[in-house]
Length: 261
Image (tube, rainbow, N blue to C red; front, side):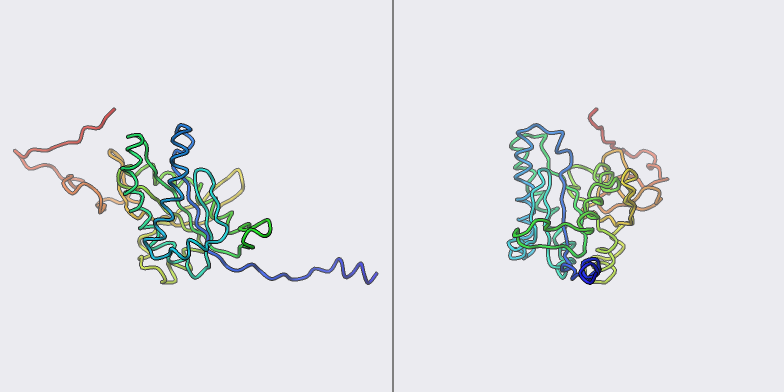
């Protein structure tokens, strides 16, 4: 009986260390040709590595936890103290690297473009350095990927000018609270927009926050985060466009953009 009691008794376990997790996903990857998928597959890792290097985080890149190529994306983990740096300056640098990469992609095919969604989460995640199965498995990883695949991120990228906005970023509620509201990033909390992460088929709903390093609006559409906010002009909006509710002065010449069909 004593042996049975010992076996049945629940015991407490030590948690894995708190880790920040960053996941990326390329827009429209599955709609490209096999040749282009190979190019983008290589480019995703390269642009992320370059962004780490430009931020002075090359050593962190070399020692990242559970690095994994997902075909159309990439996942890395880092010690929790690096969470604010994964948000800023890394995401802004990644936008810059993506912009620098576009001419090289256009050389391969003028219609080829790499635009990314990114999600940043935080929580206890194991990492044995590959010695054991299950590295990176945990609630924080699940939350991060559900945010990455959430409609608000996809809609924000689709609504932006594809020549300007190459990256949108989502933060889980925990990551936003600790890094942004905690005052550890150089970004004001006003740079983030609350979003709802909802996957009804999975019975999942959670809060998230959206950040766009270089916001814009797709020609003919509203900029992400500005819908319904009358009088708000975006920093990347056309400075010569008339303000809402205004009319050109009599006799003035007005130029209008003509978009391809």
